[in-house]
Image (cartoon, rainbow, N blue to C red; front, top):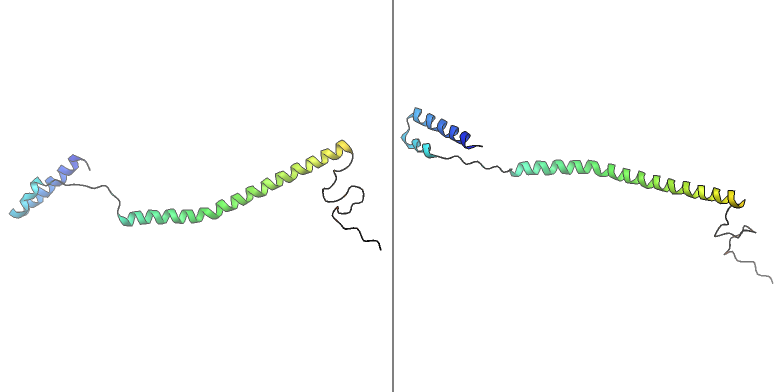
Length: 117
C-alpha cells in the first residue's frame, strides 16, 4: 500500500473514533499502518500442492515421449542398416557374409564337427 492509502485509512479510523466520542481511541490519530507483503503458510502449501499435481500429470507423458523417441531412433537405425546391406549387394552382387555363419556352408562357425570313430 502506498503512503496515501495508509493516510486515508488512518483518517477514516480517526473519523470513526471521533464520531463515536470515545476518548481512549482518539490515540489512533498518530497511528501508522504497516503492511507486510508476505505469503501465508496455507497459500504456500496450496501452490506447492498444485505444482505437485501438475508434475504428477506430466511425468507419464514425458516417459511416453521418451519411449517414442527411442522407438523412432531404433527404426531409423534399422532403415540405415537395410540401406547399407542393399548397397553392398548392388555393389558386389551378393549379401555380406554373416559373422556367425560361414559363407560357403551356411553352418554356424562355432558348431562342433562330429567326431569320427
